[in-house]
Length: 235
Image (tube, rainbow, N blue to C red; front, top):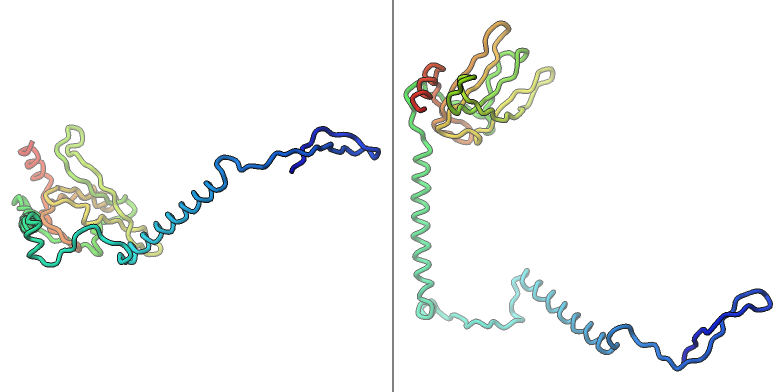
């Protein structure tokens, strides 16, 4: 039995009091019945425990509690008889690996670019994989390096400037600049600017990358006149 508030009244003390009456209404759970709700909760709990157990066994590679639906393979001969395509796939994989290795060796051979015969071949060292740009006078300007693309009617040469990296610097001196060897491409021509002293023009060096390694690279140094002839012939 429960009580329902019918109305309110004010007593002698001025307080509001409720007037209730007895009812036969029973409190029922909201939504589905309690038994069904408990059964659903128990089902979800069991599924959660099973899911956690499966995940734990997967991480620890423990598959003993579960029976495999696949037929166990007793020997390699039975496997060949039942699945002959597996042996064919393995042989094809071996052929692909050999073809890939031959392709890699061919690529390594192609990495060495033949020189143009326009200048002297020099070896440039790169400490820690970074080539330090030449820097004659720090007060004149900073050095830079750019990739030469072709001829330009306004500037003579098309340049695509590369991003340099600041190296360690000594106290009281500006930081030196360098570029990772990995950003240099074999067969490409690059222009380097070395600021000279006051009143002298900047020195420009043109190199064509022939081969490179993590700590050095070989390049063909080309003069400006020979570079223009080469670019005109390539046009």
